[in-house]
Image (cartoon, rainbow, N blue to C red; front, side):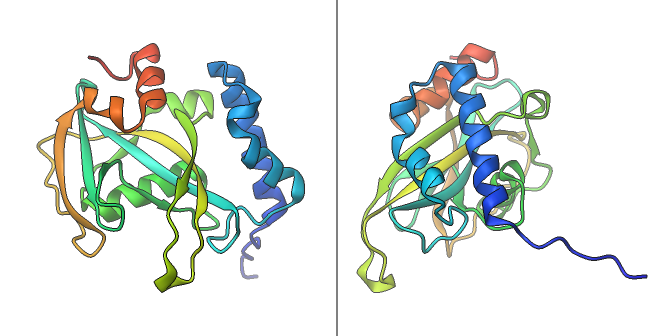
Amino acid sequence: MGSSTVPFDPAAFREQIGTILNAHAGAFGVPQERHALLRRQIADGDALHARGTWPGHVTTSAFILDPAGRRILLIHHRSLGRWLQPGGHYEPPDEPAMSALREAVEETGMGGLVIDPWHARTGLPIDIDSHRIPARPERNEPEHWHHDIRYVVRATERDAVRPDLREVHGAAWRDVADLETIAPQALRNMRLLGLAHP
């Protein structure tokens, strides 16, 4: 008798995102209005897993830290022209943390990356950030929102970095304080928990 694959359930995914959102808000004291659009899209039954869902959809990203939590690996994003953490569109049926890890591996080419154990203990992301993405007429994409669910991933600076140059201009280890201008709330949360250090 063959094993059957359970089909992806968009409603269950929406419910999962709502549960993660509420637990994260409770853990970090996040006001409900910070994620008003995401909450509205959950209530409206939007297909949050699909990259063609407007006004927004789920993405995942990874803060790749060294073991001491003092250095972070950033990629220079091709389409946005900025130094950022690796990330991208959520792809069913991955768990959000595994989606973030997949993006980290794909964009940096690094082996040996692991999700920080704090996530397994708590079931929480380190940050959830909804941010506006510019329109891309060449792809028929209007201005829209990425609801980015973010995780801490651990690596060592000895691991070889082989960035995917189709996706990024390059990758570099930087001081973790550089996150102040990229993802300040995530950095505050990491410092609060002792996952990152000044």
